[in-house]
Image (tube, rainbow, N blue to C red):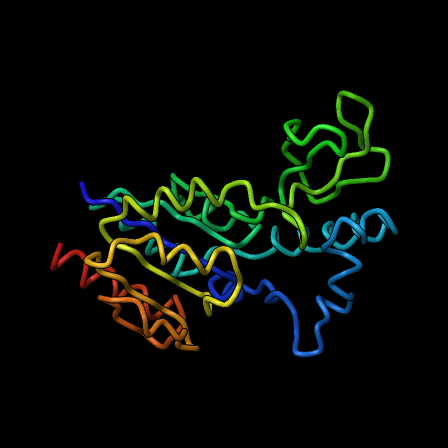
Length: 229
């Protein structure tokens, strides 16, 4: 069974109603990114950070997976499909994808502030001040913030190197290190890019572009793959 590796980004979640990363003014849902998505912001005001992610978690629970997510599940009937996502929501899992790698962490997990290996699921939408790990330390969202290492990048790069087919869906390929995953894909491997804003990948070989949303572009990719592979 051939292996498909799919890199997904904010665009696929936006179709479900989750706001994209930040607006042109550099704000993230009304907040400076530095205040809610950096270790420094956490140190300055952890209550603000907790509330920010509580609201994002609440919103994520209110929406549903869309056709873009569902197509990736349907492809599992014919291929081994590994989803590498930059998104922190759980829409891929809720759609039914069986193999999902979260590059930037998960909105529905918390972790210890003294021991990063202590990770806990979050039931519901609230993570509160006073919620502590087994070592007595305040829990933080298990999110990769700006300035932090991306621990799953090495795993994702290895998967990309083994891919027989590589798909990019809902990302403009400007956020690194995730955008660099395509560099690990072998030149002869077929690549499909689905995004309304066509990324500039002039140096990459064997790319077919679909300048549209994942919900409409992914069915076309599915049909091509089933017919030709």
